[in-house]
Image (cartoon, each protein chain N blue to C red):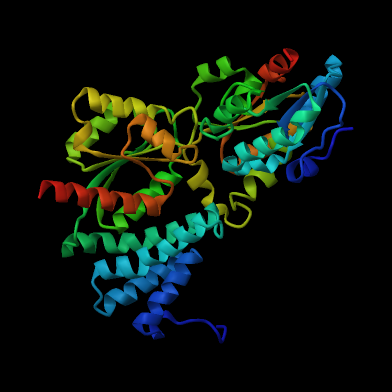
Length: 230
Length: 208
């Protein structure tokens, strides 16, 4: 054992959480799992472990990705580590009745099989307290509509990586309009070739350039919706 | 003389200063365009290339093309942009319209090499495409930027939804065929070689 090796269980809570932020940044899956278990053993609520250790750490990763300090491979490793931590927390969160902010149906559009961005958004939304129903890749409009109705969702999230598939988002939104369902959902869109102008042009509520923006935008819209219903 | 791939990737290619029409192209298309020029005797076409590495940062392509148009416009009778949409989400097309310059039609070079209509009709969205350039530069454009040299465990996160690698061959080269096959194996995908030649690229340039 190297002299400078950090023993997670010997750190106090504050040091451990900061170390977990570092470990998440470095994509160290096993260390994150160990850190999560230690905090739970010390009596932390699953919700606090999720938000203070994992989500806060992943927020740093997201900011550095946005600023061009980290790149996709590092973000994926961090996401894998966070996913491993969340796998421990998920059943406990359900048992302890952590707050639920809203429900989102998310999927990649028809003709498109890319799901890295979608998966990151789904994970960060879950971390922020949203219930996420991921309907996968290559989704025709019928599948979106069926999931939205079945799940009684608040938010529809659509993702596309290709210039050739992104126009399909408009097909989904137009169908929602035709069926008189458009105003029942907050529609968020994202993906590398999209931009704000495109989001507006197709009638989405917002274009989200990354997972952090998606979470914040979803929170803002949900709280506005609740306020308007109050 | 054909410039080296590394030069085309990092720096691009300066114009020769000969010809009425300047082609502003992606560095990944330099060899193909120079080959077409030589084969057809298109002395009226000059070529400059932007660094092929912009392929990795599509959000930078539109501005880079705009700067190149501004830099060279006064020296030529006309300019033609040899990029497809290339992941710019329609922004490059819009900018070319604003600048009053024409560009190659299609979503990607994979599409115009095969022919845009044929490519679209295939609806082959579980295929990952490589061209001659991308086979030669597989490590620089795929393996390393995706971090697979350092973290091979990420492979299935990137490629798990693909089922085959299609090598769109612009030329008949057994060495490239063998390398493309090896690329497919490294990505865990089935392999298909498809000879395309220069497709719509030749048609677009012959009209200038």
